[in-house]
Structure formats: C-alpha cells, structure tokens
Image (cartoon, rainbow, N blue to C red; front, side, top):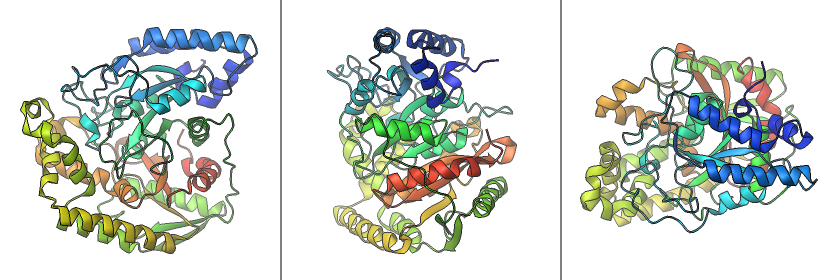
Length: 456
C-alpha cells in the first residue's frame, strides 16, 4: 500500500512532485482529508484550507510550466501556534490571546519558506506560551503520542502538535521553536528527527517569544536530510551547503555527569547500543566530565533559571491582571518564580553563561557531544494532569538534558535510536557549540542510519 503523502519524507514527496507523479493540489487535499479523519483533534489549532489550496494551485502551475522554485515547491508544512500567519491572531497556545488583533503579515520564516514554494497547512497545538516540556494544554487539549498504544502518553513540548502531526503521518514537516528543548524533546518522544539551530541562525521576527536570550527554532521531520533541505530554504538557498561527513574519524564525546542521572534502563540501553554501532562504524568515542553542567544546575538552584526570569519579564503585567485566571495554572506558577530573580542575580547568570560557553567550547574543540535527548520515555498523560507536584518534577526532568544545550548556546539534532519502556521511542541527541550547524548536520547525515539501527 502506498504511504499517505503526509507520511512521506520531504525528499520522497519532492521526487513525486517534481516528476509530475503527484500534483500539489492533490497532495494538499489528501493532507486535509487525513487530518479531518484523524481521531486526535488536539493536534491542530487552526487549519488554513483556503490558503493552502491557493498556494498549491500556484505551485502546480509553476511546476507544470517548468518554473519550479526548487525541491521544496509544493511541500506541505505546519506551523507551531506562535508563528505569525497573516490575517490571524497569534495565540501561542493560550486562550487569553484569542482576541488579539490579526497580524498584518506572516512571520519572516513563514515568508521565506513560502518563497521556496512550501504550502502552509495550519497551526499546531503547543504548551501554553511555550512554557513546558510536556506538551499538556488545558485549553485546546493535549495531542496524544502516536506510539502510546497502552495508555494516552504525552507528546512532549512545547512543540507538541508539530511533533505529533509528523509522527502521525499527517504532514511531512512542521516548524517548532526551542528555548529549553521544545523541538528536540517532542522529536525524541515521538520517534522523529528534530533540529534545533544555533540561536540567531534565523530571524525570529514574527515569532511569539518566551526568553529571547534562549529562543531558537527548527524543523521537526522524518529525516536529517529533510531538516537540511528546510535549513537551506530558510536562508533563501535552493540547495544546501551542508555535505555529509565521513563517519569514520568523527569524534563524539559523551558527558558523564548530570545527563544520565535517573535515566531509565530502556533509554540507557537504546543509547548505549547506538553508541556501540557508531564506534563499529568508525566514530571515535570518548567520555568526559562537563563541569559546566554542574555549574548550570547550581546557578539555577541559587539564582533561578534564566528562562524563568525572562518569561516573567515578558508576562508580568498579564500575571498581575485578570488574564492570569484564564491561563494554565502550572504555567502561571512556573512563570511567577521568575519574580524571585533579582537584577544582580540576573546579571550574574548572564556573566556565568558567557564564561561557561567559552570554557565549554575550549573543552569540546572539534568534537560533537552525545547523550540521551530525554532521560525517560513519554509518560502517561492522566497522572500529570491531576498531580501538580508530579507535573513539576516530570517537567524538570524532561527539560534537563536539552536545556543545558540552550544555556550553552549549542545547536542539536535529536535522532531516534530505538525504544525503551512500553516500546516508546528514545532520542539520541547530537550537539555542537554555537554556529557549528553545518558540521553538526553533515555528521548527522552520515550517522543517522547507524544511530537509528532498526528503528524506522
């Protein structure tokens, strides 16, 4: 049986479109039919059916006339619910913004990918204001992890709907943002690829912020190759400058502190098996301590988290007014913690960050870093919805590994590496210091099949 269009990779779908074997209008109609039939109605917050059909018709005409804009012309994409879409209010997963004025134009990245010929399908659900790694949303519902066949399990957040839309085979790619792990966490928990670019690699104009010192973005898709193609288009390129690096001789360092604390046995086993496969394929594996990790956690305990301080600054007026009553109580509780971070402490955090970034870059050198994207598989939703203490503890553990990279300004790619408890996916996180995205993606292109092993 032929795969649904939404379940294909970007590269597979591109071949069909550019060869004339599939028409963008046919693809878009099939995509919406799949979304309409899918039982989980919490994945999307808005569908852009009229816009998508119009864009598909334009793509179809271009390709038929021999004027294709490139490999991404006619490819559908979904957007996390904090990217501006012309004519719509940007709600960021919250009901308190539903009455906001419609935006006059698309976010800059939406415009860039439209210029590449990509077709906007809709907006995907998310943790309210992007402030949770679990993906639970009391306003629009919580998208269910497609791999959770025993009980409903979390999608991971905050780009929850984006990950589920791809993992469920509804769209080939969705765009997310990542402030503490919001691309890599849901990618890992849903068994797909997720690329978090270096902060500042793309413009954030028209993207609702969380913490501007940490905010970045990137695609959730099926393969690293798809991410590489999307990355190129976001820079206005028709072909990527990224080249696959020979796997033999690539140096990969595995931190020994913090990131394996409390790791589930199944996650550790899947990660270790992937490391062994990499070593057999010629990668040079080393193990080392990352002192920065312990210093980051100590600073958070002493001064509070950088993301929390900046989130409070962003939302302080909202939290002081009646809107707070209409927000997720756990988002309100976590954001208010930022009020405790005094100005001297905030400055101390920034100074610490600058020092640790420099020290870590010297320690890492030309190596890549590898550790589990998340120390556990996706847990059940129900207990987290009713037990706030469990929610807080699980959220902190879920965010821990990826948030270290945000603080140190790393780029990273989460690749499925196997399964853990209950047959749920495990993510293998490859990271590199800031602005080494090309080297990271080139290595990930070569390593992906080895890391995945038997995981499809």
